[in-house]
Length: 426
Image 1: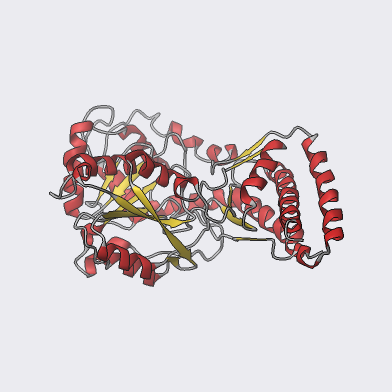
Image 2: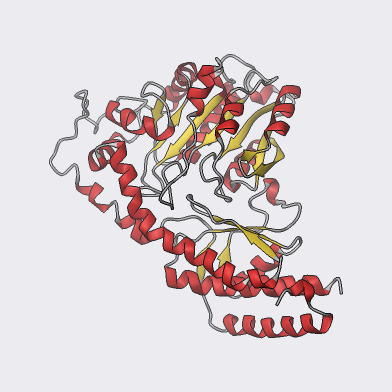
Protein backbone atom coordinates (compact mmCIF):
# COMPACT_ATOMS: atom_id res chain seq x y z
CA UNK A 1 0.00 0.00 0.00
CA UNK A 2 3.08 2.26 -0.12
CA UNK A 3 1.94 5.16 -2.28
CA UNK A 4 5.48 5.80 -3.47
CA UNK A 5 5.63 2.32 -5.00
CA UNK A 6 2.34 2.65 -6.90
CA UNK A 7 2.10 3.12 -10.63
CA UNK A 8 0.09 6.00 -12.01
CA UNK A 9 -2.95 3.78 -12.63
CA UNK A 10 -2.74 2.36 -9.11
CA UNK A 11 -2.49 5.86 -7.66
CA UNK A 12 -5.50 6.99 -9.68
CA UNK A 13 -7.50 4.05 -8.38
CA UNK A 14 -6.37 4.80 -4.81
CA UNK A 15 -7.22 8.49 -5.20
CA UNK A 16 -10.71 7.72 -6.57
CA UNK A 17 -11.44 5.22 -3.79
CA UNK A 18 -10.24 7.70 -1.13
CA UNK A 19 -12.27 10.50 -2.71
CA UNK A 20 -15.42 8.38 -2.42
CA UNK A 21 -14.66 7.79 1.27
CA UNK A 22 -14.18 11.52 1.71
CA UNK A 23 -17.52 12.33 0.06
CA UNK A 24 -19.24 9.83 2.34
CA UNK A 25 -17.85 11.64 5.37
CA UNK A 26 -18.82 14.98 3.89
CA UNK A 27 -22.43 13.84 3.71
CA UNK A 28 -22.47 13.17 7.49
CA UNK A 29 -22.56 16.92 8.25
CA UNK A 30 -19.94 16.79 11.01
CA UNK A 31 -19.35 19.88 13.15
CA UNK A 32 -16.21 19.33 15.22
CA UNK A 33 -13.72 21.98 16.33
CA UNK A 34 -10.10 20.92 16.94
CA UNK A 35 -8.59 24.31 16.21
CA UNK A 36 -7.40 25.21 19.73
CA UNK A 37 -5.96 23.34 22.69
CA UNK A 38 -8.95 23.82 24.96
CA UNK A 39 -9.58 21.69 28.05
CA UNK A 40 -12.58 19.41 27.76
CA UNK A 41 -15.68 19.99 29.94
CA UNK A 42 -14.67 16.93 31.97
CA UNK A 43 -11.34 18.58 32.77
CA UNK A 44 -13.06 21.77 33.88
CA UNK A 45 -15.34 19.73 36.14
CA UNK A 46 -12.30 18.53 38.10
CA UNK A 47 -11.89 21.97 39.70
CA UNK A 48 -15.52 22.83 40.46
CA UNK A 49 -14.90 22.33 44.19
CA UNK A 50 -12.72 25.44 44.10
CA UNK A 51 -15.81 27.63 43.83
CA UNK A 52 -16.91 26.64 47.34
CA UNK A 53 -13.65 26.84 49.29
CA UNK A 54 -14.35 30.38 50.55
CA UNK A 55 -17.87 29.60 51.75
CA UNK A 56 -16.62 29.64 55.36
CA UNK A 57 -16.40 33.43 55.11
CA UNK A 58 -12.65 33.59 55.70
CA UNK A 59 -11.32 35.92 53.03
CA UNK A 60 -8.08 36.85 54.77
CA UNK A 61 -4.61 36.10 53.49
CA UNK A 62 -2.06 34.62 55.86
CA UNK A 63 -0.70 38.15 56.40
CA UNK A 64 -4.10 39.37 57.61
CA UNK A 65 -5.08 41.22 54.41
CA UNK A 66 -8.75 41.05 53.43
CA UNK A 67 -8.52 39.67 49.87
CA UNK A 68 -11.78 41.41 48.95
CA UNK A 69 -10.06 44.77 49.25
CA UNK A 70 -7.20 46.64 47.57
CA UNK A 71 -3.54 45.79 48.16
CA UNK A 72 -0.77 43.26 47.52
CA UNK A 73 0.12 44.31 43.97
CA UNK A 74 2.39 41.31 43.36
CA UNK A 75 0.13 38.67 44.90
CA UNK A 76 -0.76 37.36 48.34
CA UNK A 77 2.17 35.68 50.12
CA UNK A 78 0.70 32.17 50.15
CA UNK A 79 0.07 32.37 46.38
CA UNK A 80 3.68 33.42 45.77
CA UNK A 81 4.89 30.46 47.86
CA UNK A 82 2.46 28.15 46.07
CA UNK A 83 3.33 29.09 42.47
CA UNK A 84 7.09 29.70 42.82
CA UNK A 85 8.07 26.00 42.53
CA UNK A 86 5.84 25.61 39.47
CA UNK A 87 8.09 27.89 37.42
CA UNK A 88 11.36 27.26 39.28
CA UNK A 89 11.89 30.52 41.16
CA UNK A 90 11.93 31.76 44.77
CA UNK A 91 8.85 33.39 46.28
CA UNK A 92 10.45 36.85 46.10
CA UNK A 93 11.11 36.36 42.37
CA UNK A 94 7.50 36.07 41.26
CA UNK A 95 4.49 38.27 40.55
CA UNK A 96 1.07 36.60 40.77
CA UNK A 97 -1.16 38.18 38.14
CA UNK A 98 -4.61 37.76 36.59
CA UNK A 99 -5.92 34.80 34.65
CA UNK A 100 -3.88 35.05 31.42
CA UNK A 101 -0.15 34.48 30.96
CA UNK A 102 -0.56 35.64 27.35
CA UNK A 103 -1.74 38.98 28.69
CA UNK A 104 1.33 39.18 30.95
CA UNK A 105 3.64 38.45 27.99
CA UNK A 106 1.90 41.12 25.92
CA UNK A 107 2.19 43.63 28.77
CA UNK A 108 5.87 42.84 29.31
CA UNK A 109 6.69 43.56 25.68
CA UNK A 110 4.46 46.64 25.70
CA UNK A 111 6.39 47.99 28.70
CA UNK A 112 9.69 47.35 26.92
CA UNK A 113 8.39 49.37 23.95
CA UNK A 114 7.23 52.33 26.01
CA UNK A 115 9.82 52.49 28.78
CA UNK A 116 12.65 50.11 27.93
CA UNK A 117 14.21 47.43 30.12
CA UNK A 118 16.39 48.32 33.11
CA UNK A 119 17.35 51.77 31.82
CA UNK A 120 17.95 50.81 28.18
CA UNK A 121 16.40 52.72 25.29
CA UNK A 122 12.64 52.09 24.86
CA UNK A 123 12.10 49.70 21.99
CA UNK A 124 9.79 52.20 20.28
CA UNK A 125 12.83 54.44 19.76
CA UNK A 126 14.91 51.71 18.12
CA UNK A 127 15.11 51.51 14.33
CA UNK A 128 14.16 47.84 14.32
CA UNK A 129 13.25 45.15 16.83
CA UNK A 130 13.70 41.45 16.05
CA UNK A 131 12.70 38.27 17.86
CA UNK A 132 13.92 34.73 17.36
CA UNK A 133 11.10 32.23 16.91
CA UNK A 134 11.69 28.49 17.24
CA UNK A 135 9.47 26.79 14.67
CA UNK A 136 7.04 25.19 14.56
CA UNK A 137 5.83 27.30 17.48
CA UNK A 138 2.93 28.97 19.24
CA UNK A 139 0.84 31.17 16.94
CA UNK A 140 -0.15 33.61 19.69
CA UNK A 141 3.50 34.39 20.43
CA UNK A 142 3.96 35.26 16.79
CA UNK A 143 0.76 37.35 16.81
CA UNK A 144 2.18 39.53 19.60
CA UNK A 145 5.26 40.19 17.49
CA UNK A 146 3.14 41.07 14.47
CA UNK A 147 1.03 43.44 16.56
CA UNK A 148 4.10 45.39 17.67
CA UNK A 149 5.80 45.23 14.27
CA UNK A 150 8.62 43.02 15.53
CA UNK A 151 10.53 41.22 12.80
CA UNK A 152 10.57 37.46 13.36
CA UNK A 153 13.42 35.09 12.51
CA UNK A 154 12.73 31.37 12.19
CA UNK A 155 14.89 29.07 14.33
CA UNK A 156 14.77 25.32 13.58
CA UNK A 157 13.79 22.96 16.38
CA UNK A 158 15.74 19.79 17.16
CA UNK A 159 14.90 16.90 19.47
CA UNK A 160 16.60 18.67 22.41
CA UNK A 161 15.28 22.18 21.74
CA UNK A 162 16.03 25.06 19.35
CA UNK A 163 19.19 25.27 17.26
CA UNK A 164 21.51 26.77 19.89
CA UNK A 165 24.45 27.26 17.53
CA UNK A 166 22.30 29.48 15.35
CA UNK A 167 20.85 31.34 18.35
CA UNK A 168 24.23 32.02 19.96
CA UNK A 169 25.64 33.38 16.70
CA UNK A 170 22.69 35.64 15.94
CA UNK A 171 22.32 37.22 19.40
CA UNK A 172 26.07 37.86 19.63
CA UNK A 173 26.12 39.78 16.34
CA UNK A 174 22.83 41.69 16.10
CA UNK A 175 21.86 44.31 18.68
CA UNK A 176 18.35 44.61 17.23
CA UNK A 177 17.53 41.06 18.36
CA UNK A 178 15.80 41.69 21.68
CA UNK A 179 14.17 38.39 22.53
CA UNK A 180 13.26 34.80 21.82
CA UNK A 181 10.09 32.82 22.43
CA UNK A 182 10.50 29.47 24.18
CA UNK A 183 8.07 26.78 25.32
CA UNK A 184 10.69 24.65 27.07
CA UNK A 185 8.59 21.79 28.47
CA UNK A 186 6.44 19.90 25.94
CA UNK A 187 6.85 22.57 23.29
CA UNK A 188 3.86 23.75 21.30
CA UNK A 189 3.20 21.87 19.04
CA UNK A 190 5.93 19.21 18.97
CA UNK A 191 6.02 18.25 22.66
CA UNK A 192 9.81 18.61 22.89
CA UNK A 193 11.50 19.03 26.29
CA UNK A 194 14.64 21.15 26.28
CA UNK A 195 17.73 19.18 27.35
CA UNK A 196 19.88 20.22 30.32
CA UNK A 197 22.58 21.39 27.90
CA UNK A 198 20.08 23.53 25.99
CA UNK A 199 18.80 25.20 29.18
CA UNK A 200 22.36 25.89 30.34
CA UNK A 201 23.30 27.40 26.97
CA UNK A 202 20.23 29.64 27.10
CA UNK A 203 21.14 30.72 30.63
CA UNK A 204 24.67 31.61 29.54
CA UNK A 205 23.79 33.48 26.32
CA UNK A 206 26.10 36.37 25.51
CA UNK A 207 24.02 38.93 23.65
CA UNK A 208 24.95 42.16 21.90
CA UNK A 209 21.70 43.74 23.11
CA UNK A 210 21.87 44.49 26.84
CA UNK A 211 18.07 44.36 26.97
CA UNK A 212 17.73 40.94 25.31
CA UNK A 213 15.25 38.71 27.14
CA UNK A 214 14.29 35.06 26.87
CA UNK A 215 10.49 34.77 27.04
CA UNK A 216 10.33 31.37 28.76
CA UNK A 217 6.67 30.34 28.47
CA UNK A 218 6.54 27.25 30.68
CA UNK A 219 2.86 26.66 29.93
CA UNK A 220 2.94 22.85 30.18
CA UNK A 221 5.37 22.37 33.08
CA UNK A 222 3.06 19.95 34.95
CA UNK A 223 1.04 18.61 32.01
CA UNK A 224 2.45 15.10 31.83
CA UNK A 225 1.03 12.16 29.90
CA UNK A 226 3.47 9.45 30.97
CA UNK A 227 4.66 7.56 34.06
CA UNK A 228 8.18 8.96 34.04
CA UNK A 229 7.95 12.56 32.86
CA UNK A 230 10.93 14.62 31.82
CA UNK A 231 11.72 17.73 33.84
CA UNK A 232 13.68 20.72 32.65
CA UNK A 233 16.24 22.62 34.69
CA UNK A 234 15.35 25.93 36.32
CA UNK A 235 16.71 28.45 33.85
CA UNK A 236 16.86 31.18 36.51
CA UNK A 237 19.00 28.97 38.76
CA UNK A 238 21.31 28.20 35.84
CA UNK A 239 21.53 31.88 34.89
CA UNK A 240 22.47 32.81 38.45
CA UNK A 241 25.41 30.40 38.29
CA UNK A 242 26.92 32.43 35.43
CA UNK A 243 25.87 35.89 36.73
CA UNK A 244 23.32 36.29 33.95
CA UNK A 245 20.07 36.19 35.91
CA UNK A 246 18.51 39.23 34.23
CA UNK A 247 18.31 37.47 30.85
CA UNK A 248 15.00 35.66 31.36
CA UNK A 249 11.30 36.23 32.04
CA UNK A 250 9.46 33.05 33.04
CA UNK A 251 5.70 32.67 32.52
CA UNK A 252 3.15 30.12 33.69
CA UNK A 253 -0.52 29.75 34.51
CA UNK A 254 -3.26 27.39 35.62
CA UNK A 255 -5.28 27.94 32.45
CA UNK A 256 -5.14 24.23 31.66
CA UNK A 257 -5.05 23.14 35.29
CA UNK A 258 -8.22 24.71 36.74
CA UNK A 259 -10.37 27.05 34.62
CA UNK A 260 -9.11 28.40 31.30
CA UNK A 261 -10.99 31.67 31.72
CA UNK A 262 -10.46 32.01 35.46
CA UNK A 263 -7.06 30.63 36.33
CA UNK A 264 -4.01 32.38 37.75
CA UNK A 265 -1.00 33.56 35.71
CA UNK A 266 2.49 34.31 37.02
CA UNK A 267 5.76 35.83 35.89
CA UNK A 268 9.11 34.97 37.46
CA UNK A 269 12.41 36.77 37.02
CA UNK A 270 15.49 38.10 38.79
CA UNK A 271 15.01 40.48 41.71
CA UNK A 272 16.14 43.41 39.55
CA UNK A 273 13.70 42.52 36.78
CA UNK A 274 10.86 41.98 39.26
CA UNK A 275 11.45 45.36 40.92
CA UNK A 276 11.36 47.11 37.56
CA UNK A 277 8.24 45.27 36.40
CA UNK A 278 6.43 46.04 39.67
CA UNK A 279 7.13 49.75 39.20
CA UNK A 280 5.40 49.70 35.83
CA UNK A 281 2.65 47.37 37.01
CA UNK A 282 1.81 49.63 39.94
CA UNK A 283 0.78 52.38 37.54
CA UNK A 284 -1.68 50.15 35.64
CA UNK A 285 -3.37 48.33 38.53
CA UNK A 286 -3.70 48.35 42.29
CA UNK A 287 -3.97 44.59 42.56
CA UNK A 288 -5.14 41.50 40.73
CA UNK A 289 -7.93 39.12 41.77
CA UNK A 290 -6.72 38.06 45.21
CA UNK A 291 -9.86 36.05 45.92
CA UNK A 292 -9.02 33.83 42.98
CA UNK A 293 -5.46 33.47 44.21
CA UNK A 294 -6.83 32.50 47.63
CA UNK A 295 -9.26 30.02 46.08
CA UNK A 296 -6.44 28.26 44.24
CA UNK A 297 -4.24 27.99 47.34
CA UNK A 298 -7.10 26.82 49.57
CA UNK A 299 -8.33 24.28 46.99
CA UNK A 300 -4.95 22.63 46.43
CA UNK A 301 -3.16 23.36 49.68
CA UNK A 302 0.30 22.64 48.29
CA UNK A 303 2.02 22.63 44.92
CA UNK A 304 2.53 18.87 45.25
CA UNK A 305 -1.23 18.46 45.56
CA UNK A 306 -1.69 20.37 42.31
CA UNK A 307 0.78 18.01 40.63
CA UNK A 308 -1.31 15.08 41.92
CA UNK A 309 -4.44 16.80 40.59
CA UNK A 310 -2.88 16.79 37.12
CA UNK A 311 -2.92 12.99 37.16
CA UNK A 312 -6.71 13.26 36.90
CA UNK A 313 -6.22 15.35 33.77
CA UNK A 314 -3.89 12.71 32.42
CA UNK A 315 -6.56 10.02 32.91
CA UNK A 316 -8.85 12.05 30.66
CA UNK A 317 -6.27 13.13 28.09
CA UNK A 318 -4.02 10.10 27.59
CA UNK A 319 -6.76 8.06 25.85
CA UNK A 320 -7.37 10.97 23.47
CA UNK A 321 -3.69 11.33 22.57
CA UNK A 322 -3.34 7.56 22.21
CA UNK A 323 -6.36 7.48 19.91
CA UNK A 324 -4.72 10.06 17.63
CA UNK A 325 -1.28 8.47 17.43
CA UNK A 326 -2.60 4.88 17.27
CA UNK A 327 -4.91 5.72 14.37
CA UNK A 328 -2.15 7.55 12.52
CA UNK A 329 0.16 4.58 12.98
CA UNK A 330 -2.46 2.05 11.89
CA UNK A 331 -3.87 3.92 8.90
CA UNK A 332 -1.01 6.07 7.58
CA UNK A 333 2.21 4.20 8.35
CA UNK A 334 1.44 1.50 5.73
CA UNK A 335 1.10 4.23 3.08
CA UNK A 336 4.83 4.95 3.06
CA UNK A 337 6.56 8.16 4.03
CA UNK A 338 3.67 10.45 3.25
CA UNK A 339 3.64 11.83 6.81
CA UNK A 340 5.33 11.87 10.20
CA UNK A 341 4.01 12.84 13.63
CA UNK A 342 5.05 13.21 17.22
CA UNK A 343 4.01 11.00 20.13
CA UNK A 344 4.27 13.54 22.94
CA UNK A 345 4.88 12.63 26.58
CA UNK A 346 3.02 15.72 27.74
CA UNK A 347 1.57 19.05 26.69
CA UNK A 348 -1.49 19.68 24.57
CA UNK A 349 -0.72 18.92 20.94
CA UNK A 350 0.41 16.41 18.35
CA UNK A 351 2.60 17.90 15.61
CA UNK A 352 1.89 16.39 12.19
CA UNK A 353 4.04 16.84 9.10
CA UNK A 354 2.44 16.00 5.77
CA UNK A 355 4.25 15.85 2.45
CA UNK A 356 5.58 19.24 1.39
CA UNK A 357 2.87 21.34 -0.19
CA UNK A 358 -0.06 19.40 1.32
CA UNK A 359 -0.91 21.00 4.68
CA UNK A 360 -3.22 23.75 3.41
CA UNK A 361 -5.10 21.29 1.22
CA UNK A 362 -5.57 18.81 4.09
CA UNK A 363 -6.88 21.51 6.42
CA UNK A 364 -9.30 22.78 3.78
CA UNK A 365 -10.56 19.28 2.97
CA UNK A 366 -11.22 18.70 6.68
CA UNK A 367 -12.95 22.05 7.04
CA UNK A 368 -15.18 21.43 4.03
CA UNK A 369 -16.26 18.14 5.62
CA UNK A 370 -17.01 19.67 9.04
CA UNK A 371 -13.79 19.31 11.07
CA UNK A 372 -12.04 22.57 11.92
CA UNK A 373 -8.28 22.39 12.50
CA UNK A 374 -5.69 25.03 13.36
CA UNK A 375 -4.92 26.87 10.14
CA UNK A 376 -2.04 25.49 8.08
CA UNK A 377 0.95 27.76 8.59
CA UNK A 378 -0.22 28.99 11.99
CA UNK A 379 2.77 27.36 13.71
CA UNK A 380 5.16 29.64 11.80
CA UNK A 381 5.75 33.42 11.93
CA UNK A 382 3.45 35.40 9.65
CA UNK A 383 1.41 32.20 9.12
CA UNK A 384 3.88 31.10 6.45
CA UNK A 385 5.11 27.53 6.66
CA UNK A 386 7.93 27.49 4.05
CA UNK A 387 7.23 23.83 3.27
CA UNK A 388 3.43 23.92 3.74
CA UNK A 389 3.58 20.68 5.70
CA UNK A 390 2.97 21.24 9.45
CA UNK A 391 -0.44 20.79 11.04
CA UNK A 392 -1.13 21.13 14.76
CA UNK A 393 -3.59 18.54 16.07
CA UNK A 394 -5.40 19.45 19.29
CA UNK A 395 -6.94 16.28 20.79
CA UNK A 396 -8.07 17.67 24.16
CA UNK A 397 -11.53 19.17 23.68
CA UNK A 398 -13.62 16.60 21.73
CA UNK A 399 -14.83 13.43 23.39
CA UNK A 400 -12.82 10.32 22.53
CA UNK A 401 -15.55 9.12 20.18
CA UNK A 402 -15.79 12.50 18.44
CA UNK A 403 -12.03 12.58 18.20
CA UNK A 404 -11.86 9.16 16.56
CA UNK A 405 -14.46 10.24 14.00
CA UNK A 406 -12.52 13.44 13.29
CA UNK A 407 -9.28 11.48 12.92
CA UNK A 408 -10.92 9.09 10.46
CA UNK A 409 -11.72 12.08 8.28
CA UNK A 410 -8.28 13.63 8.82
CA UNK A 411 -6.54 10.43 7.69
CA UNK A 412 -8.72 10.21 4.58
CA UNK A 413 -7.84 13.84 3.77
CA UNK A 414 -4.11 13.12 4.22
CA UNK A 415 -4.34 10.12 1.89
CA UNK A 416 -6.29 12.09 -0.71
CA UNK A 417 -3.96 15.10 -0.68
CA UNK A 418 -0.88 12.85 -0.77
CA UNK A 419 -2.15 10.79 -3.71
CA UNK A 420 -2.95 13.90 -5.70
CA UNK A 421 0.48 15.37 -4.89
CA UNK A 422 2.20 12.19 -6.08
CA UNK A 423 0.11 12.11 -9.24
CA UNK A 424 1.55 15.48 -10.18
CA UNK A 425 4.96 13.82 -10.51
CA UNK A 426 3.79 10.79 -12.51
